[in-house]
Image 1 (tube, rainbow, N blue to C red):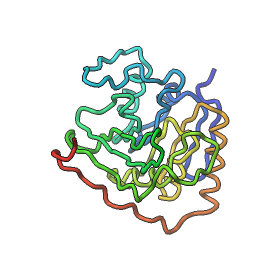
Image 2: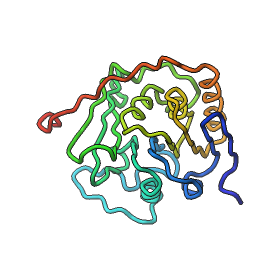
Image 3: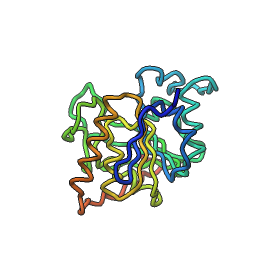
Length: 227
């Protein structure tokens, strides 16, 4: 049985239906992996989650660790959202904090991503005025992220030309790459979300944004401001 169930090319975007753990070894290197794993869903959960105040010991048999080890081997830089759930901060990396300006008291007000491009003690806070949790959704995906969030991520890294998203979902990373003129490879295991991503990326090519607004500079917090 082949690992790639469906393979679609749209412009400079290659979209693959399949399990990312099986598909990634078949791909070449990418300049960057930018992704948002589905924390708390199915097999990819907080098995090794962020246990506050305790040292987490990785288990080689846990899918989470296998995933993180794979993307380190095939990419130069990585931004992985949900780092507070997976405890996936890299030894020589840092963190990005997305202030979502969430008005609902029972919703997450911020999300954290591990970033291999940062120094270990450096935290970057993205200005919430760039994009908030109240963005207009473009699909039925329950956790669709703003395209502008991923535009910021691509621009933050040192000029990556090839981007991989192993958990493509509704394709926001791919749409951002289309708008910025970058090559994109996306992997998605759910057939319905895969088709949604294909459609959104097709529309992005049909309606190119020639005036993508440059995201604002990140705010670099001093160490004394971190707590």
